[in-house]
Length: 67
Image 1 (tube, rainbow, N blue to C red):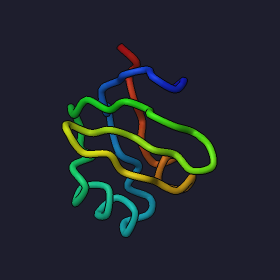
Image 2: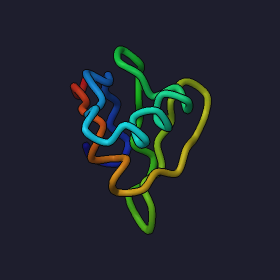
Image 3: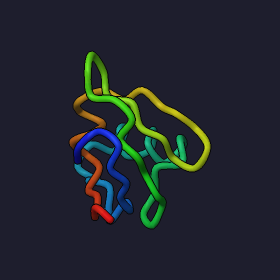
């Protein structure tokens, strides 16, 4: 995704259970709308009305369908 693009979370990679649970606790779940707000120096996403700063590992666990 590019900065400013919006997508729908299609799935979360379950390979790292800790990361998957952490993302779920932040509301990053299948079917939710997500917007990439910033890429550098850290990734910042907006899910619903909340902005979250995520690590590269967390970002790589999120699969998104860009809309």
